[in-house]
Length: 257
Image (spheres, rainbow, N blue to C red):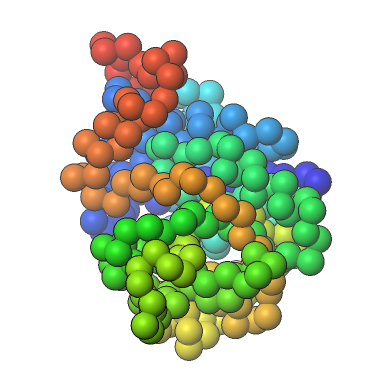
């Protein structure tokens, strides 16, 4: 199975302009993501797909591969497709450019699932949800799984509804935004219009479910550590400092490339 990894990285984030270049422990965030993703076994290529020359220059400065994509791309999936449409591969691994603490073992489990389950057009990561605060938080995306590990639905609402059940009695799952697309599914996906479910929830993975795509879920214990706003930088630095080996961390005097 030939896998190409793509990290969409948009410069003009509404809440955090220039986010991919934000320094985290002395390195730009996009470098952390690339270095963590490079530890995933079996990737033929790892590409940063961006709309800004400054990000291209930063990625090439630390030895990564970057391509300039259209500023008109509506989503990370559109940007990923633009980056790979001229390449031959079986699976496109769509990673998040704002996850500096990306866990390679979870991504590896997702790729192994795609190797085993040939009926899955799309795979993603989920993690157990064990805090009521997250269950009720609309910014935390929940998913409902079948017995076979297929994703039945994604929602910002608390699903499933716990009628007469104590919290913790029913397995609950949080979505972790990493996707593994079969190449033909990604090509079709970016051409499909938004359906009513995607428009209602503002969750693009619902577009795949609306078109009958089987989405398989790999379970990870990594909950994600996304950087959405400048205030999240301190949390990301604390997570990296406590979870990564000292050899993976820069020296105190390191600087941006």
